[in-house]
Image (cartoon, rainbow, N blue to C red; front, top):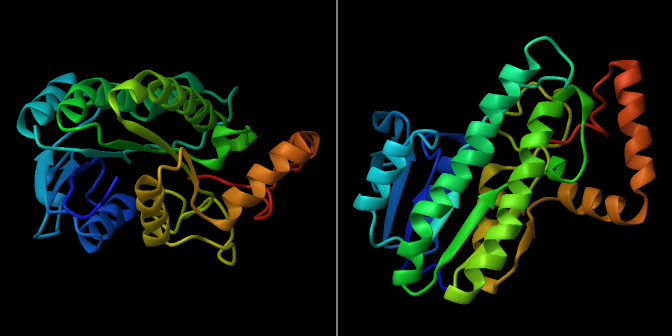
Length: 253
């Protein structure tokens, strides 16, 4: 679909990647952009329309759907990462929080906006996932579990919504230069600019691509997972045994 002339809603739009999505949509010609954030006052882009939106609150999601009846692009960007190993103390608390935002929040937004998108001609939904949707990094395992689940939600929604003309896009990236990933790797680790991820997502929407690999790290890991998944498993075991988060083996959004 065309980005020019579209009406979009971005979740988690107040900073980092969400802010970059707002900027990229405007540059691509979107005529209206709703910027969802738990605190609307945190949205600093004067050309966006701030709306209160905590994706874990069904009341907020319902109100957003009532207000944003003209949307034809939904960007599910809001996310949380708590950096917990699976068997660490409190990992259940971490994983519940990550699942609430990264999985159930995405599902709630899709369920609320799918009828609106259908009414408006189909449109598109882009879900911000991660390279760890494909494998598990042990020191960040609960987050990985949430992104595995979010990928399943994305794939299932694509199948169910194709008939109404809604294109559901999965977006993958490694390290993005945002606050979320700031301490996941050393200072010299390569990071992708948020704007690159946003621009490639919009290119994917415009070109009808189901799976957008938005940076070099996602391309590398996609190819490696297809060609030699055992190598990935071995490197994850080594990372855990050494308790050393190598910049070569620690991907994450």
